[in-house]
Length: 399
Image 1 (cartoon, helix red, strand yellow):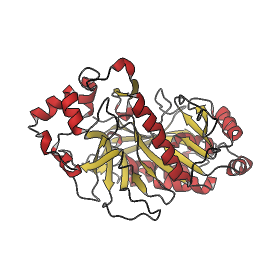
Image 2 (cartoon, rainbow, N blue to C red; image 1 turned 60 degrees about the vertical axis):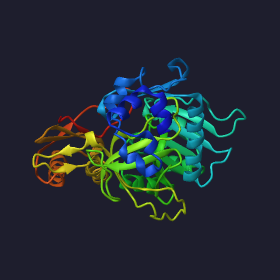
Image 3 (cartoon, helix red, strand yellow; image 1 turned 90 degrees about the vertical axis):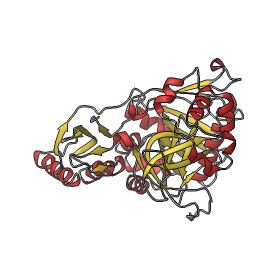
Image 4 (spheres, helix red, strand yellow; image 1 turned 45 degrees about the vertical axis):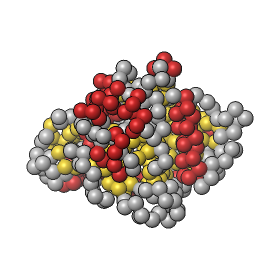
């Protein structure tokens, strides 16, 4: 892939020549650390004129658009061959999560866009789509009618729907439901464990990226966070691009091994993560390497006045534990750092919200933020979402 990119993609040829890279000396996976990192801004500037490989026409490729929490629009092009492999890879991940993905299984997915097919041509592996922006009551009705074996959706949408379900609704879902797959938004293991207890099935995370042509890592039923190493090479590096030792948290950098039309090599995704050692075992017996932790978007983290860094994963737990503790007083929330010394807990109040509860929540969040910043609890009529229905519950407005 590296040789293909160098010889056929002007962006990489220029980048590697300027860095003095001898392409012929890159011979094994560990050598990749000698290549310069590809930044998001470079990809934006290069599209489509200098990042599409020779022999491919942008007019013949599928283009995906992603903005992420950075607000910067990135465009990625895939060939038909890459799209087919992306679909097959997804089916393989479902097979892992479900302990077997069979032709008669139904997947219901709540998402911003509709897959180009509703299953395979013979009617197997049926997919039922619910729009993310559908009203909650409509989404609940469609979900119950579809009787899925697998439910795939954003974590925030799962929480919204969960609050509408009666015990009878949950019993109906459990008749078929095998697993819930959450993706595209950050969630923590504590959240997934709480949802798993409520629904009575595993709730597993899938980490993917449009830039990397789909799924990079996903959880098995034993919660091992397996990297799909035959389609993606994942590194964790410091801000200067130097590889970090196993277990240390840093920037996630990844390379896609099958998008020949628009190669993505050593791309800084903007997420924070740590790796287990290559020989770290998983009870499921799979040998793919595992993420030790996934801390979410770097630009969704908070830096307090003292310089203390709080990852989006930690902050997500701060908010979610308030929701669990005050479930009758809170319907939903976002934690927003509006200034270095001001964090606002924006929330939709529930029927049990009182001034006493509001002040208690404020004090608890202040303590969890080490009393380093002013904390306010602000009632809002709606929470911030993207035009694709995603909810980023941790927002930093501080440059």
